[in-house]
Image (cartoon, rainbow, N blue to C red; front, side):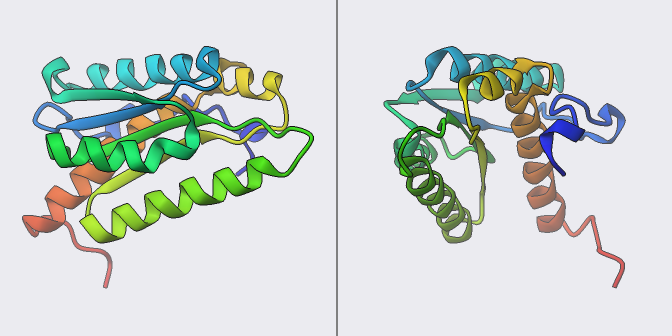
Length: 171
């Protein structure tokens, strides 16, 4: 669904598991800091709102979005989190650099997820311009950092539930 049709900060809180016993990593790109720090605030606050403990949220910064997978791997190796949230913003410019960076980050996070069996969440904005980014970093379309935190909580709970044999899919 296009972001223009959905607020990134809206979700059914009643269906979200408690994050009280979960450990999270957050990796934030410094490039486009005004935007990425707003994403971080939304993410961090959402984790706390749903029971995550401050001491169980580990944050690192990397220079840019391209470095998110490497930063995520380093953080995961040190803190063994249940999920790692990667926050960045790659604004389309006059060249195709955004396509290469976005694809590399997405592929890197997918590879980390598959190899480790942990959720590495793609919380990277890929807007056409700065205004679109601001609209998705706490503006009129909500905050993708909130969406990334909700996804991390759900994925961490899914892994735990499947490991304990609690959930079954309808077949």
